[in-house]
Amino acid sequence: MSTPYPFTALVGQDDLRLALLLNAVSPAVGGVLVRGEKGTAKSTAVRALSALLPEVDVVAGCRFSCAPGAPDPACPDGPHEAGGGVARAARMVELPVGASEDRLVGALDIERALAEGVKAFEPGLLADAHRGILYVDEVNLLHDHLVDLLLDAAAMGASYVEREGVSVRHAARFLLVGTMNPEEGELRPQLLDRFGLTVEVAASREPDQRVEVVRRRLAYDDDPDGFAGRWAEEEGVVRARIVAARALLPRVRLGDGALRQIAATCAAFEVDGMRADIVMARTATALAAWAGREDVLAEDVRQAALLALPHRRRRNPFDAPGLDEDKLDETLEEFGGDEDPDTDPDPDPDGDGGGGPGGGAAAGGTGGGSRLRTPGPSRPATAAAPRRPRPATTGSRGPAARASSRPCGPVSRSVRRC
Image (cartoon, rainbow, N blue to C red; front, side, top):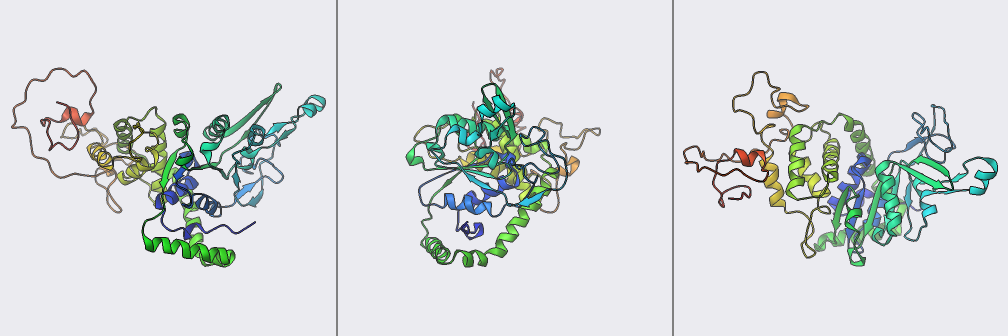
């Protein structure tokens, strides 16, 4: 097997590398869709990531990579007794564009099942990718029914095969990565929504950066092993950081303030359904773990929105991709104040001091940064301005909008309807 290009030797592509690393920390994020023109290191980055993943312990002889400490009770090769296993490298499995359904999910030997009464099941690519990476190049060219099967398995963490009255189920939890060139066609919106994160990549227009890309690639092609050896130390640092972030992830606290910012952001960009909110919450938690923190900050929510929402927002065909970052910042600032914006200025002595898993500490943190506190400049008081009687509203407005008495105008920090 050829030596993969080192992940840490990639030049630029910060968003792509971050999205891949977040999924390595927390596969529950839901995978990555990488969109971009040809020749932008999409496939190189995915293959490089596989070398960074920590080894996994598997039951010896199990074709479905069951964990020795908690084997899958429905494993077709089971039952397995809990105990010691063997360590092996995490796999990266590639799904060819021309693959058949049986190659993806596996196949049953119906004749043997009927003659011998056993479930003779031949594992497919979903079983091979369990606890590793499943990579689909040119996912937009894959048959729609295969994409449906693939995304269903990724969402459920299991694969089901039904043939001639025989049913087989096995675990299928993997890091899903798809790459595509939009020039060759788009994915259906309902399939786009099933990818947790999306990243737009393009070649750099900076001559110095392009020179460095060519220099490193030529050095790798001349001596892959020697080039990889020069980056071994950096690779080890990133690998250790992934392990540490995975261990920290269960202890990361996602407070009510962060959840309010996530919900407000998804509502502001008019995304459909609740999947975006859930993916943003998981991504923000993974970002905090990757940074070595136990609390989600506003900066985590902002970065999560930039990765999780661009492919989910409603836009016209000729709109530019990505998010309106000014609108994003306004939304986060508006909903980044007190944990409960409707509370009285005088705190209730029996209250919980700001709520959330962090308790009162969330109101003014110390150390690396305040939790979900992005205070804006002081605003002029408006109590002296007479209020006009206002008719009852027929739509719903956010808590900050209901509490505000400022007239509509360009000085307002958020868009308000008169």
